[in-house]
Image 1 (tube, each protein chain N blue to C red):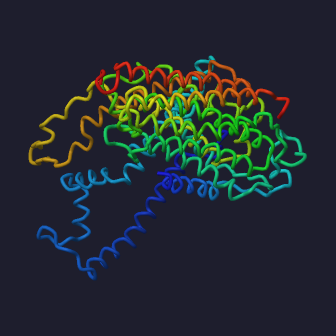
Image 2: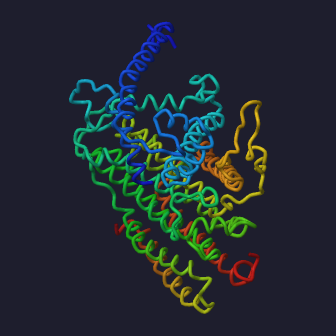
Image 3: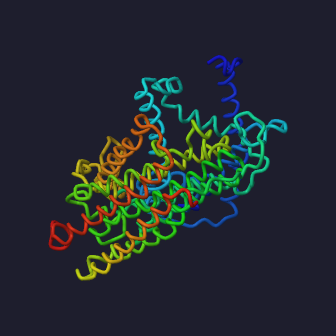
Length: 432
Length: 110
C-alpha cells in the first residue's frame, strides 16, 4: 500500500479535512446568513397556519416527519423518482453493480482463483468502486483518424438505450417507468438499436479490430433477433396482450415456463447471444481480436459501455422473469406493517406520530419487488454461469444455429402454444 | 429514461475529461490499436461478403415476425377459422426460408 502514496500521513490528512471544514463553515456563514437576512427583509413571505413562513420555519419542517413524509411520498409518486431511482436507473445500476461483483467472484471460484481480494478488506467488495475511480481518472485517448462526434456519443447512447430498455421492465404491480400497451414491441424496437450503435462506434473508430468486431456484432445480433422475436410469440398468443405488466399479472397461478419450456430455452440462448456473452462473445473475442468493438475505447468511455452492458443484462433477465417466470407473482412473505407504528407512539415527554404517510411502500409492492429480484438474480446467475463452462463457438456455427435450429424450435414453441389454446387447456374456458 | 440516461452519463465523460491527466502527445499515441505495431493501411478494411445473405434474409423475415405479432396478439378474439390462412402463410414462408438458407449455404456464389 505504501507504494501508492509514499508520503501519506494520517495527521496531515485529518488536518486538511479540518481546514476544508473550517473554510466551508466560514463561507457558509459569510454568504448564507446575509442571504437569509435579505430574504427576511425584502421578500413578502406567505403566512401558513397563522405563522409567518421564515427560512427557519422551513428548516424546522425538514425535521418534522409529519410534514416531510407526505412530501417524500408525493415525490415517490412522480415520474422523476421512477426514472431516477426505483424501477429505473438507480435500481438497475445497483443490480448491475452487484452482478459485476458476483460475476468476478463466481468466475474466480469456478477457475480456482480468488478473484478481487484486497480492495475493501472483505473479499474485495470495494473493487468495483476502485475500478470506477480508476476509469474516471484515466486519460481518454481517441484515435487520430476517428470520427470524433460519433465516437464520443456512442458510449453515452449505448447506456441511454440500455436505460430505455430498463424503463420497460415492470418490477412490482404498478411500478414500471413506461407502462405502454405495446410494451413487447417497444422492447424489440429498443433491442434493434444495439447493433446500430455497435456498428456506428466500430465504423467511427477507424481501426481494424473494432471494425471486425462491429461486423461480427451486426451478424450476431441480426441473426439472433428473429428467433428472439418468434420465441416470445407463444406467450403473446396465450395472453392475448403485448403489455408487459398484463403479461406478468396473467401468471398469478402458474408461470408460462411450465407450458412453454421450448420457448424459454430458445429465448435464453438468444438472450446470451444478444448480450454478447460466452459462448457467443464473438464481437469482443479477446483472444482473437483484441477486445472487438471495444478496442479503441479508453478510460470512462469503456466504463460507460460496461455499465450499459450490465444494464442490458439486468433488463434481459428481468424480461425473462416477466415473460416466463411469473414476474412479481409469488407467495406473500412480507409481514403486514404493525398498526401501532401507524397510529403513533408516546415516548415519555414526546409524542411521535401519527405519521400520515409512514408506510412509504405498501406490502404488495415490497413482496413483488422481493420475488422479482430473487428470480432476476437467479436468471442472472444462469447467464453468468456459461462463462466459466463453455468455449467460444465459430461464426458459421453461430449463424447456422441461429437461422436453422433456433428458428425451428421457436416455431415448435408457437405450435405448442396454439395446440394448448385450441385443445382448451389454456385461454378462455381453460385453466385460467 | 433515454434522455435521463444521456443527461446522467454525459457528465461522467466531462468529469473524466476534467480530472484525467492529458500528457503531451507523440505521433504514436493517437494511432489505432494494432498490438504494438505501427498500423498499416486503412482502418476500414475490406471484409468478406460470405455471410451477407443472412443480412438480406433478416430484412425480409424480421418484418414477417412482426406481422406474426399482429396476428398473435389478436388471436383470442379471432374465430378459429382465421388460423388456417395463417398456416398457409407460414408454409409459404417456410419454403422461402428453406430456399434462402440453401442459397446462403452456397459459399461459392457469394
